[in-house]
Length: 107
Length: 121
Image (cartoon, rainbow over all chains, first blue to last red; front, top):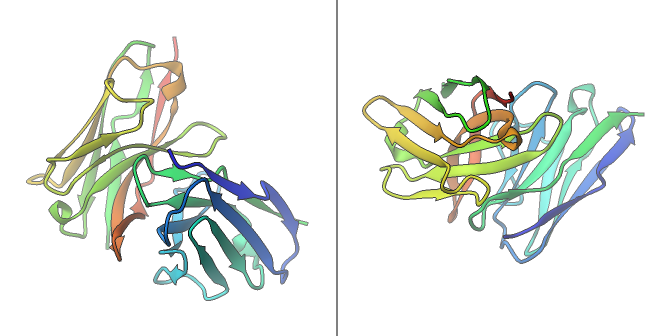
């Protein structure tokens, strides 16, 4: 199975800050990686797929990059509604595997 | 508008069985592989099972293989997860997920609201 390791596990930031989350795969996944945002009690929401493609309706302050084993999700200017937990997902092979999550908290 | 509505969750004793359903609308159901993903209370996301659009191919996480069966009825636009020999570790919210295809890979494009399964005596 491909292991996905996210860092940091949590980050405290202020509105307007730039936040970067990284995800490392235990083996190459090409660009077959997605990022999700989840708020408490809600289903995850797709933000980025194919490592860098922005899902329709997602604000442009979200961006993704990377290929192979190393990926990043960036939020250029954190907004109040962005405080949530973020997960990466590899779509290279079965079983699908997620990172352990990164909680973005208010400083 | 895509809608996925899960049902069938509830409280069940260890060793018991439960069948989850996911009613889909707003897209051509038979054209999309579908997945089940779960989330234990306070924990992260875990892939459970997947099924191809025509229902011929199925896939399972090792943790549920031999105990869970995924199926679909394309005439009813409904996805199922038959769960048996349930364990306390299966306690989770179970999400039905519609895939999104792009350049050779299927991602989790849209999620239902989830249904809670609690395995406890």
